[in-house]
Length: 247
Ligand SMILES: Cc1cc2nc3c(=O)[nH]c(=O)nc-3n(C[C@H](O)[C@H](O)[C@H](O)COP(=O)(O)O)c2cc1C
Ligand code: SF4
Ligand code: SF4
Image (cartoon, rainbow, N blue to C red):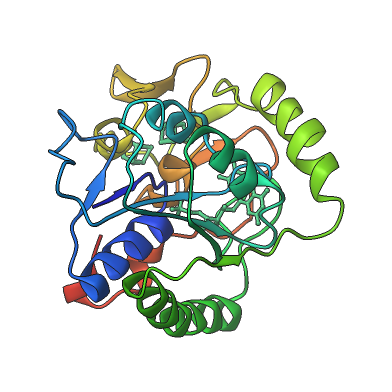
């Protein structure tokens, strides 16, 4: 059984690919009504994106729920560059036999532009190969720690992550430009239910998960975050997947 959280699809695709390769099922924790029966679970996996070298709060809250299993447990974080100490922090709250990071296209367009087209394609192609290797190791229940922590991992995962959760999770800078046509897609797809339509225009709550699904997936590219995102490209893995792998 694999539980995942995902903003722009990297982690959803990763979880579903791993489920397919290991004969398992993947569940989106934001749409899960109740926990599936875990008694006969042979493996339990968690997949999520790295946020400021840490575990997204929604996943950190979720791992308080499932019972601790004797079976094989693993975690995979997807990240644009470095994961910091996130997997070690995760394992303190939910014991993991294996931990991985998977390099995927960067979706944090508040900080910098997306990866260029060739890098996006190269990262997804490399991830496909890495997922096959991971799936074999998981099926053999082989304990592995293959996480790209990057430099200054401790400082980033403690100080920078604290700063992110305290100060950078504001949704107030989000706004929709005039080319928004009021389609409501951002409202329907927000995993935090933090967007509503007022007179046909989206308005945001004070805080959200910062998953960046809304800004990256608006069909009109009408959403901005303050001044930082104007002129930057948008990224979602959904634009790069064949029909039978859509997430
Ligand atoms: C709020 C936020 C913070 C991020 N912080 C990091 C980071 O610290 N290190 C990193 O390598 N990537 C970081 N990223 C990039 C994502 O982890 C990466 O693109 C991930 O694969 C997105 O997964 P998703 O498509 O499942 O949401 C960040 C993205 C967001 C939205
Ligand atoms: S998805 Fe884009 S076009 Fe549709 S309502 Fe939201 S901001 Fe407007
Ligand atoms: S408001 Fe946008 S960034 Fe925030 S949780 Fe919703 S979709 Fe994600």
